[in-house]
Length: 111
Length: 115
Image 1 (cartoon, chains in turn green, purple):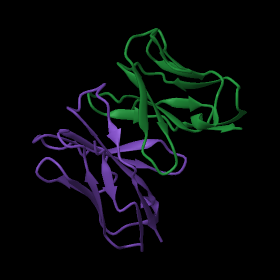
Image 2 (cartoon, one colour):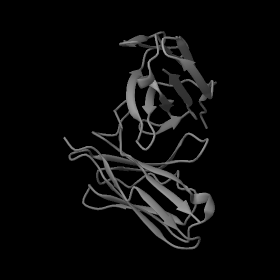
Image 3 (tube, helix red, strand yellow):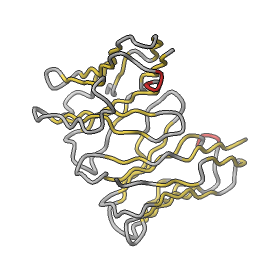
Image 4 (cartoon, helix red, strand yellow):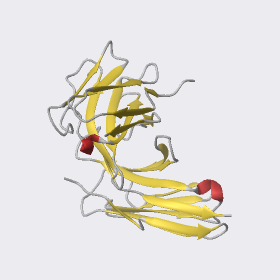
């Protein structure tokens, strides 16, 4: 079973601060996705990374896939209250359609 | 356009009762997934439907759980003789063709509480 460990589990910061959350595994993934989930809603896909060493930017969010395709990070610059939510990483779970999810990082950005 | 919808949004039931949860995927999506999200846990894969192929039921936790997809569209997840450990949010997702890294679109979930 391929496991994804996310850290930190909880993060509470002030508006304007920068933060990084991590997604680590001992397994290699062909692709890795990041989702954000808000209370009462389903996860929404933010980005998919498929190439080792790849860096993708989405406004203030920067996603990186490790060179060995075993880990990923999400960096948020100048966090805003609207960034509050549960951030989940997910990788292909040993099949071409099944996703394995981490337990998530619950981010709170205080105004 | 319409996204994935699920009903009911909340379900409270007594231990031992059967429950049915419904998912309406995005029109035209051939792949449909069910996940379970428990407090403090990540999303746990339950079952996958793709077109007319036999579903992948490998994630169903026990034989009390079953799911069907009628006409390649609507899906129903049934839990028989519910137990307290079945309490969770049940999420449905659909995607265009099912192969990764295809985008999965999630519904809002059904929160199931078993008393």
